[in-house]
Image 1 (tube, rainbow, N blue to C red):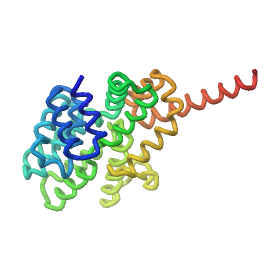
Image 2 (image 1 turned 45 degrees about the horizontal axis):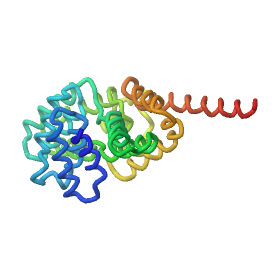
Image 3 (image 1 turned 30 degrees about the vertical axis):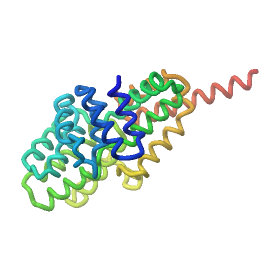
Image 4 (image 1 turned 135 degrees about the vertical axis):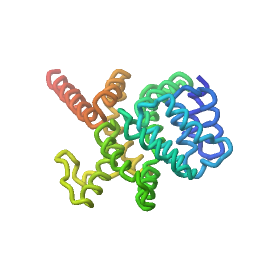
Length: 278
């Protein structure tokens, strides 16, 4: 529908006034669509949050009602409340973020949405549309730096609920299906446990493997680099892409990428075998 088209167009818009307008159109056009709302909130995050068209607090509150089991929408809501100076609402949202059973930033849903919009509305071929889907997913990452900033300020101010941030990172490391969120949680857990002189869990990744997690150009480029690495297999047909996205949702991104590597290698070996027997 038009709201989905507006959400995708907003990501591709070059100028903030246009992207903000499209974000507002998307949020108004599909008020009960979590993926569209997520994109709208990310288009309005940061310096554009004060724009009159950006109803950031209301959209994020709506997301928590639509997707109450998703910790990511709760932590983003906590950040919004904190930046508005509402400590009580920030604490309540952070408590919900700790308790939520799942955590994701609609990574797989965004790829599906963009692929459908571009193939159906713009007539793009599948491979091109799916590639853009990964680009949109990378461009609308959570505001990880805001998560970190809020938790640092909570600790600095000596608030009696500072331990909630530790609880959040522990929960996030266990449940996050998306690679960047899990890597960030692992890094924060390592910092906390080392500072307190506690034993690190055996499954915690080594620090040197945590190479990116900020919502910066570098992290977007890292995601897109992996997409290009697998693109020949992923974009061969829609079934390959859907299998990969479904695996992320069921088993997490690391497991999905490992399965993808195995499938891609099998495809390459089968191709070499066919060449040999010609």
